Length: 330
Image 1 (cartoon, helix red, strand yellow):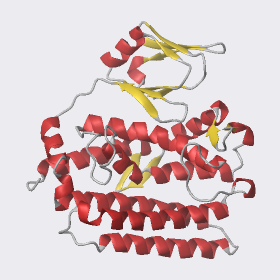
Image 2 (spheres, helix red, strand yellow; image 1 turned 120 degrees about the horizontal axis):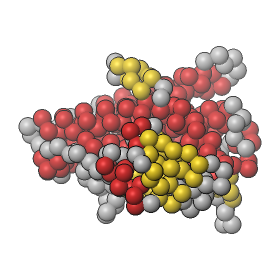
Image 3 (cartoon, helix red, strand yellow; image 1 turned 45 degrees about the vertical axis):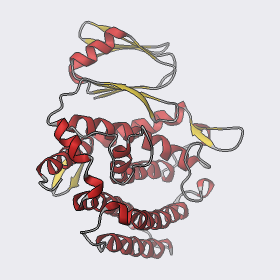
Image 4 (tube, one colour; image 1 turned 90 degrees about the horizontal axis):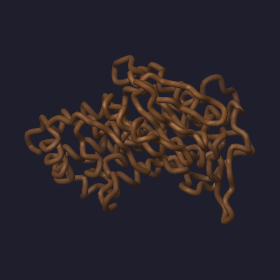
């Protein structure tokens, strides 16, 4: 289980072989054997004894900013062949395998967008069904464009081209979502922190939670999260995490869109900043995290296997690490 501490004033300590979570409303203990990750948000506390208990039990601890992005982490990881993987990662920008991986990641992102739109098309009888169909066809065209990029080219030669196709698909996709969402929450494209609207504010926080999962999966698989292929320009940024998270954004999109379309979201779940923009507040975070935790347990068909969503990212990262290790030309 994931132990997510998102209530201000919550204090996490060690009692025997358990984590004790205490605030004004609750006092509860969780066995360390059942906890796989602890996520701490702002205005909460964790004792050093509790940190030691987590390390002894190989439990990952992630500290999040108020925006949902990871601030820091503590872990005890058992890494294998990390030096070899890291060395080979450094050369992925300069060989065909690097381009092959990026094409797979971006087309997977687009396939997820198509899958989401197709689900939203079911049982529709109005003209929006045709709008979805047209969007799916256009995104499929972007997938074909990426797949038609010659294998012999390096990523540096086609980075801008791939980003162009990716951007086209995203504009089409989010344009349709805006038409399908309840009228009071319609939005105009993607916007980052601070988000220009409530939908993007919840998306941003959801992506932040997913970001921490991708980073952890990289580390436990022996991949260096700082060595990316598509994203390379940001010094001291976890570029590989930016690369890999593209494959999983669609799952957050589905969760967030469902919350809005089923009218579980309230205007009161957002704080508006002075200069314009929105952030998800504690009540909103509680709603999203609860839905996300349920989704983690859900089994989905993935690459020919029935697998729990919470295991997909780790499964992919292990496969990527193994492919890099086995690649002779790297």
